[in-house]
Length: 246
Image (cartoon, rainbow, N blue to C red; front, side, top):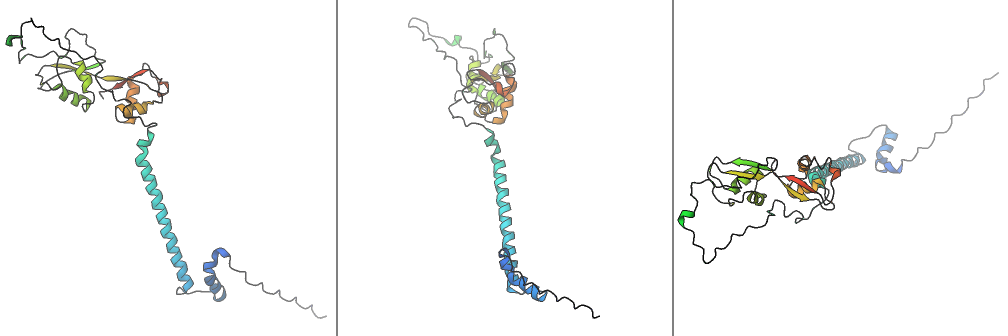
């Protein structure tokens, strides 16, 4: 008997259309499907290459933009760490002399006028503070001059500026700020000042307002360990020490 006839081959499926997302590459895809190759001189190839270059350029610009934003945030980070911007006058009296002014009495009409013999000797070493007063090493830094200096110069060396000069003057009532002091004069300079905690205050904010740097809050914390075990224990109305000498 004759073998059965072979089944006819199924018709070829029509070429599927190029998806819409690849529409710019449709000529290239069709050319490659029909001929099995394509030429780099083909206009479609050139358009694809140009588009690829544009995409790479856009990607580079985006990366540079992100890097610039990250660098800006790192640069602004110290300022952002301060939880609250304090008003300039909030601690405007920090380091100021808060002792009553001493007024020299006016001689009476019948009192004899002072003579030259009553004036202190220029070579005498002035007493910057009462000699009989007990020494307080915890509150004051004592310094004996080894060269002729004024109280302003000494305070600037100890504090790194004249911001606490008024406190130094009040601690040494026997001399004036600009008076040249001879070798051997002993001065005392306050180691700290006190501020009152106000609503909304933080240690970082107080450090920024009084010491000029929010990161120095740890110095304030160390100076108040007896009443302030941690920054969370800060209470409104309490008075805390702000160290002047680092």
